[in-house]
Length: 345
Image 1 (cartoon, rainbow, N blue to C red):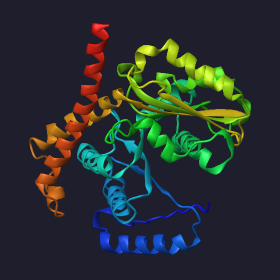
Image 2 (image 1 turned 90 degrees about the horizontal axis):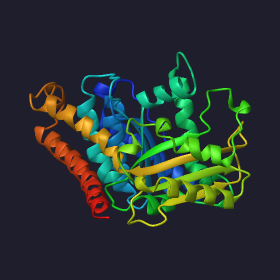
Image 3 (image 1 turned 180 degrees about the vertical axis):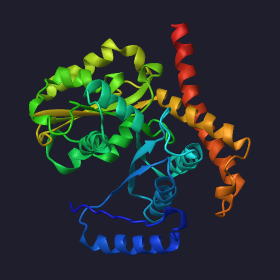
Image 4 (image 1 turned 135 degrees about the vertical axis):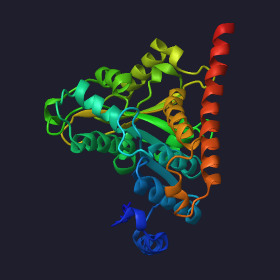
């Protein structure tokens, strides 16, 4: 399989001409298809807080969906952090972006800088982590999610199988991610964990890469992707052990809702690793936080003139807010149903 990479460089995000960029993008993509043997997915990495990642990123996603509706769309999306803010209009940008991701993405891996900083401070004991340290964690997770597409394995998977196993309802495709062993740059050669140790670290709530605590919700589904020479029997036993010990954190109406895959080729510098992808109702914490911040500003029409001055309409904000609230309500409905069932039992 020949990888397809399209890079869009924007000199000034506030005054970019969408038509020119998209025309160039279309030419690059169509021209590249002559060299692609087996192409079935797009992968987009972007931030939702700023203007370029949220605006240009979701515009590209929507145009790709229009042009190639049968291709998988996977995103690694960096959401605004609960305490650390880069720009005051983050709630607007994030809400408008989620509105597009709900409709046009198949799988969204949710990340945020504050959770990544916490991992660097608490787990890796780094005193002054840089963006390079954060990107090291993200790149390890990205590599783990896609390893079965690139290397042979005993229990192989792909992104379409991942979507089928992880998404019980089409709108609920926002995933929490984790990785083990968590290492700082350059220290991989000194880390060696067993399968039980990888499993324990991978499921640890403190090591999730987004600011939502899985202990505040329940897992609808989850997937564990192991890399390295290991026994599939041991992997299956560890996954079953996790479900049995933590049954209250899994919905009871989806049996066997933890899937595993084993890729024979480990990451560079490690003997074994594991990547976690979970579809948890606790992700609503993040959406609810962004929605509350959005409502507080939008009620007073604060900063709205910067968007309407560029041609946007207030109705677009209202629709995006409604879509975000509907998404939160869907997660809450599932959580409420589970609590009622628990009381009856």
